[in-house]
Length: 597
Image 1 (spheres, rainbow, N blue to C red):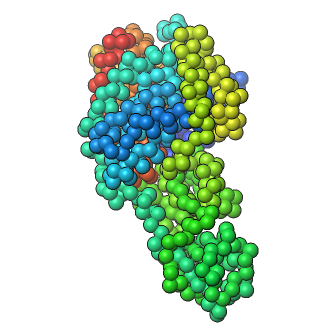
Image 2 (tube, rainbow, N blue to C red; image 1 turned 180 degrees about the vertical axis):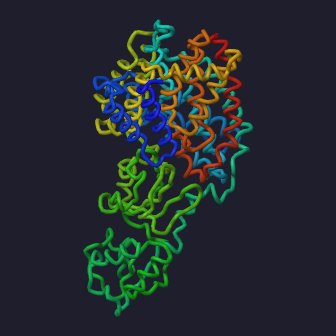
Image 3 (spheres, rainbow, N blue to C red; image 1 turned 180 degrees about the horizontal axis):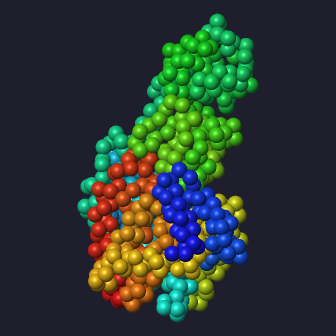
């Protein structure tokens, strides 16, 4: 093993370890690793940033923009409104939602597909008086399965396709990149069998404790948390303006929501109003915080200390879920200055089925947390979008350009058909589609930039040069030789099955894009060592890297549903492990039929 190989293995091993640890953002980990590799001379400075212009990176960014445009146009909304009903039984509902989710995620980003359907699913669950946890996990798994069907359905397929176009087999180019529907034979079989399992068997393995699954609803129970406190004549608050009480409120972790005088709520939060004897302050906080605040200002609890009527006027509440890469991930509401910048208050947080109410402004938020926000009812949707969170209320599906729905679908369909027939290079077809959307204002320029998941782009662009350096240094040959030596005497299909199982396991704990970048070059070298079809090995990696069903961290969709469904870390594998075994059992023979070894 050469010095260059040792350095590269240490860098990549450290990257994988940090990604599993999860305490540092994956884009920062990958970019720092790239910088270190260049400084140490194991990645050439001329190729250090070549990943940012890689076709896979461009395609992923464009697919995200197209997904945003389709949702903005109302195309998906019109579809879901017509076929989804809360009147159906559990199995029928899961089957239909799964079919719709899978179909959508085959042609748009699967995170976007879940974001569109999740509020619909939650509303249907509430109307049917069943636990949200019973249907959210099947929906998440269905959108992941659907992404396996086409080239643009998931980033893993995009990376594999572009890798195939540049990879060599025994010194000769393998061939062009995979086309739009090269993944369909295997992907469709896996998705179909997976959806059948999810609809009829899998959902029965989900913990359905109503109390846990309805943790978000518990946050809305404001009894004892939003209260009215009266200002007696002896209170030091008399004669002060409401804003002058903010330091005391902040010290005691209490929000001042407004002021009531002579039975009428004053407009807004009444920050500039001078407090008089007999006024009532509307405050929010945990029980201990409220008690300390009231004692500090010698306030008395109003006889009508109820939350009823608090949300009158311009104030409203909404729920949103924190996703990876949002402004709040890894920060507290106080750090983000949510109240000062957006005039929006964080009232509560639910995490893994457990509601937080005390000191929520200081709580470091994680992806999957459900937030209960209060602010101006007109501005709340924009605040949620600014935060980079997903709305859980029905307004998350409201669109303003329904008349452009059919046109948007037609433009996208033309782009896909043109790319599939080889008439136009896929990135160019998608770029033209995005340009038309922008010119016709289906999406604004700001929405175009906001829709791109920059952390994923940076991760992929940073790891591509490192992966290429490992390959050119002979590192992938060493890994492939080790696997072949361990499996000496095994038939080729058994080696493929082992590769798929290992890749699937890595995908459950790593970002799936990172998993593909590690596994794809190794798959080619194993194919060379065994003298078998490299396409079979690459397809095995594509399928297994897409299937992360054991944990909430393997795929972003699983993270997103964690809070709304009230799931805990260990709630995924009872349903996910059989599904992964089913995928292996279905995909292996299908690969051997479509891409014979």
